Image (tube, rainbow, N blue to C red; front, side, top):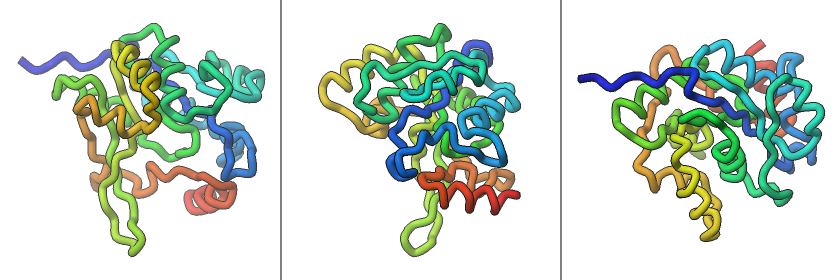
Length: 215
């Protein structure tokens, strides 16, 4: 018998916008605009448009009032050390009230609209605890290779104790924690997949170049 697909209402979508923005000169990345819309708000719009999630929230550590104006809960990290994406995972797992949490970074404004459904399908079919995206990225010679995109992660909220233990033991790499759970891996290199769907803009120059390329 085929597994029952995850009900979108059981997935909380979390926008990761809690970084220092070091490569953007200290700017709060989630508040920088893409096509006239702040990146965090743009990401919320894509999750809503795809229809694959229920409740939405933002993980942010600065300008909380500005993020709250986007109309969803704002969940800061547990401390002010800017500990990276796993701290955002922890903030989400600690607060969300659904069986599943989906994380997407704020700085990849072209992520697929069907991301939640494809991750959820793989997670259920493989009876996995989490599912990760894989997408083509160019190497130093410009050749494309599939690489894990671990911050695009659908996870069961029952993984909270595992993540807490990993962080308490000094772990800090998203990929190390995720791959320790034998994740379902989902390829996003189909003919209809946008080649820059998972491109993350780390600088204002990259963000403007991406914006101009997609205009």
